[in-house]
Amino acid sequence: DTGVSQNPRHKITKRGQNVTFRCDPISEHNRLYWYRQTLGQGPEFLTYFQNEAQLEKSRLLSDRFSAERPKGSFSTLEIQRTEQGDSAMYLCASGLRGSNEKLFFGSGTQLSVL
Amino acid sequence: DAKTTQPPSMDCAEGRAANLPCNHSTISGNEYVYWYRQIHSQGPQYIIHGLKNNETNEMASLIITEDRKSSTLILPHATLRDTAVYYCIVGNDKIIFGKGTRLHILP
Image (cartoon, rainbow over all chains, first blue to last red):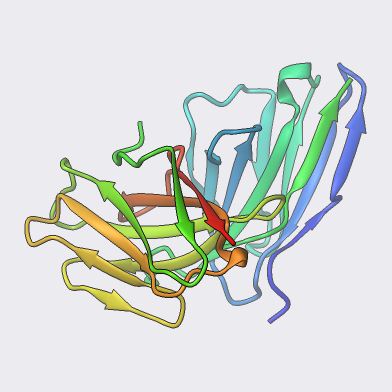
């Protein structure tokens, strides 16, 4: 059990650039979640997958954000035309459907948009 | 749209039991109560969850009132490493975090 892995750990980009983050969940987990967290706030739900199907996407999420999980294993989160307000920690979590949503989190990707 | 209410912060002396309260008066019958914690600069960590009955594991105990409208997380012998933000969450499909309780363990 290697845990949930996120890459990169840190990303600095200029406003207007596109960025992509990767999450590798625990291998047997079929559910994968993305969250965003800013300083002093709890993690904010963005979207989640069951296998390769994206089951829900937060209605607060801009259409500049897109996530994929093409083979039901790793996932990518892409932010197009980044804005300074996108600066945050992006967290990935995985879990097993039927385990009553016991989630395991990665250490996150810290995004700074200059 | 978190469904829980927690005090923003609490202190507890090292070695004592830390009792963290949570109100969830609008919980529905099939929703679980979950507790996670987040230590500075790390991702959240699962602690415990329950539906109706009290639960205990190696980390903590969860006491849920009979009407299920509130619960208490108990850390039996708090250490400095338990300093973290503790999140109480209710749900049955996805985990939605509120602001949590910032627990300070005092030496």
